[in-house]
Length: 354
Picture (tube, rainbow, N blue to C red):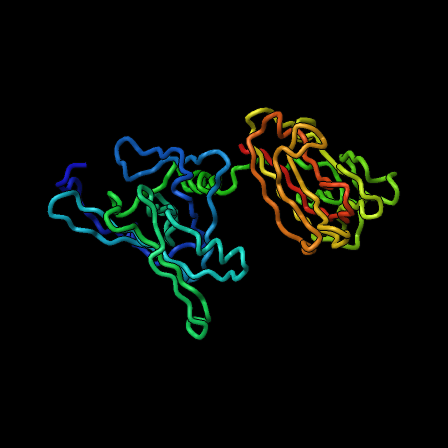
């Protein structure tokens, strides 16, 4: 773009394009460093037709109702170089959990895609911070003001303005464009944990059982246990219990072959695994149990999570990986011969990236 451009078309206000203030409820945040490619229209580089992300990365939803979200731009006039535009984005989050606080306070260098209220036509999806990112400029909260809601404001950094006031995302039509944006947040296919068991809740076929899993050092080893039970549950009616509390056993474990049906992972497939888990709270020592993706059904190549006996509340676990021989088995195991108690597992989901 030259430092001085000329007007090139009529500027028309039409009843067909009357603007409305406000944004739709959901916007989308992307870590700018996670963007792999941006495809611009060959005629108008203000139009973005596609965005792809690096492996193992995703975008994130930002939800705000009524006027809790705002965005826009300011012209930065220059006497010597091209004019630039400071992009702005602000929102008022509700979440107060420790994880949410860390997430909010850590965010920087974001790209925001937002949907304008009004016509669902080209121009309704706007992008802020595409080239240089948006950074926190203010964050404030007063408990007796604005119902105690915090407000986070982000903008382009000084000297790092955007070439344009905003970019437009559009691919063919509204439905195609929305689907492409949502795919940045959820780029995974259908559920692969389809064998009915106590932890197949995401597939909608939970049942009281442990089908599909192999075990070692649990059932039949003293009073150790691998079972489906209905007493300690996070989702639905049942969950797995693994315990070697009575007969401490090194490598007491359950496992799945991720290269066999119904998962059928091959090298270079990208996967995501999510589940909920907690310790039983038993054990004379630290109570260390872990979950791994490994080359053998007792391996520990890639640790997903480690639990100790003080971790006696359900937590959410998410792990993304690019499949190799070192990810063949999903293993949940006791980590030592100590009296390490046991764990509960529930709500397992496994998917491949499309």
